[in-house]
Length: 159
Image (tube, rainbow, N blue to C red; front, side):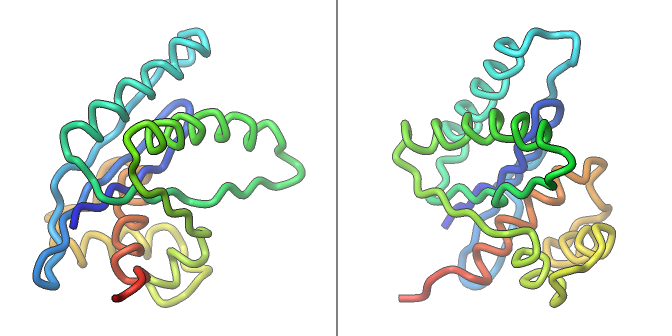
């Protein structure tokens, strides 16, 4: 089973594709899709779209996992910006007929670390440990995406 976790944002979209076979989790691919603030919004969204489309074509995931959108009332623009990048992921999911699952950040942290309010560095260390990575990924967005994919494995419906 291949699971693709995506942490979408307008500047850096992190992704992590993992394979789950015989109770073993392994990384297939992980990285970022980066855009520049110097680019116009349509160009940035197109770059994210093309990157996600190619990624899905390359890894052929059975599931795409996103973090549920949470925005603080003091920062409504953040929700707007994140919503645009998330919309791209949802569109690709629908076009490719890939199941889309969303989890709250606290639920992912609880699945990975055992505490819903765990700090980011603790989640990063656990992701690196679970996946037997030699080092913590440079971008937290990559670790977040891998955490989403791992959380799906831990919380998936069992038949």
